[in-house]
Length: 225
Image 1 (cartoon, rainbow, N blue to C red):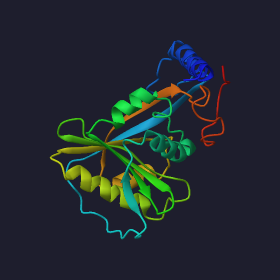
Image 2: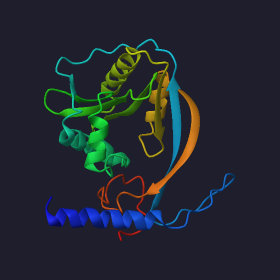
Image 3: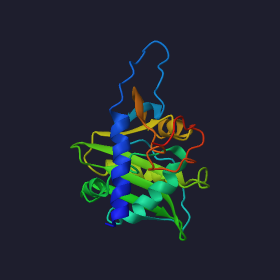
């Protein structure tokens, strides 16, 4: 790795360590809690499915295909970036290459790109590493393809592939940083909400992992260090 890249990575993690060691704010469970500059927060909803629902019919265009991309880490990152940046998806953006490889290279993890014959337009990732369970890790579409049936196609594929295995529970979580249509879509698809949490994290834009203009619906509060 070139020296300039090593210095950039070190600088990013120094900033992350500095932000992570700031004093934690006490959470007010009956009111407002102020966050320090440089932090973002989201309400997370956890959902599960205990039995396979009747699938919603959808006839995909002949040009669409699901292509495995577990082993193509560069393609995976590019698709994740295209889909996730508008919604501030950051979990994989901040993840080191070796840690991401350890996940994607696991035979119990399946990652797919939905290809429309010209380009990748959707991402589906399933995790079967917990015995008897399956996790819908990611289901997303590139900008411009929401509302055209691609999400329904990916969900039908996700449910079918999950319950093709001996699983007792299929689960997913979404948060308020995501598209407002995500939670209703999961519920219409047969998932039942069962838990809620508050997630607080360092703003990945201020750490240099995402561009400052990403996710304009979430204002940047703070400055790059």
